[in-house]
Length: 82
Image (cartoon, rainbow, N blue to C red; front, side, top):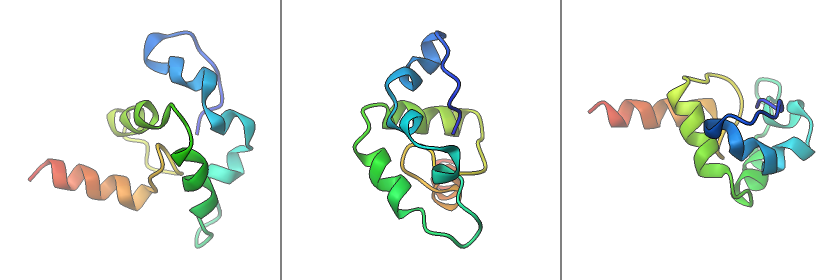
């Protein structure tokens, strides 16, 4: 998850995102590691929907974005194309 804060409207959610308080390794765990804690933090974040929209729009393929893993986002994209 990008921790860089920008003032562009589409990324303004990053300024108050809870992920900015955790290290990137939290959202980009080693293969086979749990994403449960990252998803829990995302669930409490007011920027979750904007984050997920950003990840889907920009085809982010790694890490937890908007509370969803890579595999979950892929499933969403595949479901949307049906």
